[in-house]
Length: 66
Image (cartoon, rainbow, N blue to C red; front, side, top):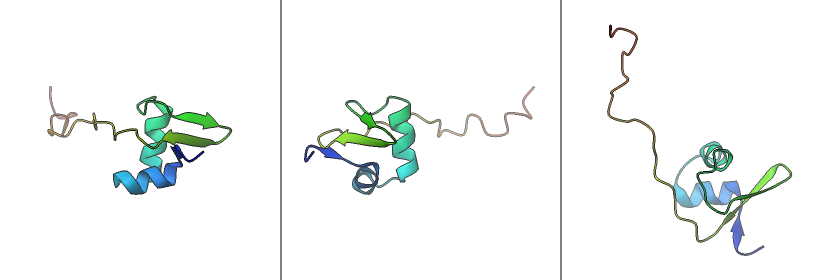
């Protein structure tokens, strides 16, 4: 299993939280990630996926727009 990392190892390598890596795995954003029971195995050579969240502020105060 040397070719795979845990969620915690991946989070430390990519500089994100383990919960964010878990969310990426659940949503299929990490290619080659495999689930074993409750744990995820992530290939070591997998690059960090692009963050697709909106950061432009476009949705800021969206309730006030009419």
